[in-house]
Length: 447
Image (cartoon, rainbow, N blue to C red; front, side, top):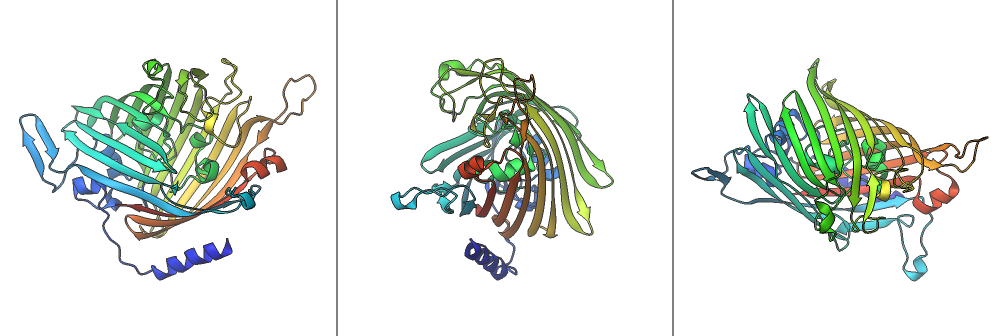
């Protein structure tokens, strides 16, 4: 592990004076603008301009040629982009028996694109003045993944758009339809470029991710947005793209509601918001831990806030989140509503978390340093009944995270992330099974 870290430091030193290059992925090709125009510090964090582009249904087009006619206005090229990752990860879980070929992150594992690492193809862009499209097709270790959405957002007043976004996602949850804050309200928009084993890093940053909202989801988002706010009311099920249980997909029994207010606070790009999940959802058999025909109660709430600006000439972002999800006692399932594929564990008590994160650009638009802390209840009963109570205490699951990123180019980035967990949840059995410490070295490329 020490050698791996020293190797990474050597790479960073070798490229310390590497020239910056303008990245040209999907939307950079369409708009003719560099990645830094839309992304705060690094991909996928959004600036105010990035929010405006997304809120406009991906329709903005720059110098790229267009095919135009009666009620037709599309780019003359179908724009695409490729995302790849490779790196190394190590946890303190009990190592596998390497004598018979069994390995796990306790042994330390290397990953490459499509084999542990990510290999994704993005395509889409402008469809018309009021419609756009985004799709992602990926492969990790031979398993196909994907997401797609079709925002249809019409200008109903000066600067205000309203419409509908049909969508399906394998692992971004109900918020995938529409989200622009960088708090982790959606799995993609938060400061860690990697999730880590069992989501260790993202769960340290974002309370919404800790309670397990990054699931498969299919549905319709009804959206109103302008530069000062957005409202997202979504009807959905926890069904993934290509679900084999198609007969259940149309029964959108769950509701996701999101309201966010965006404002300038003494020069800081700021936002506050609330999220609510309710109803009951069909979970298809392709979801981890679920059987065909499983129905769960999708109940949770969250509040979040962000401030992005400058301190001492350095770009800085602050992110605060709180979320909670009760266990599904309605249907008798011993897990929180979206936690079927969340770790650590599932439980019979309320799962909740309060998270604070911050990131500073040590070298603006080149190198960052981030820190996050989490104070959480895991939802897992400690098994120690207290007096007449039928249940014991809700085990604590706290975390501390450090992350650093360095851009080799605007569309190539290295990162080093370390998360350590503590609290009553982390007895020796759980440490051995899933590990309480995670270190990840990652190289990310988007072109």
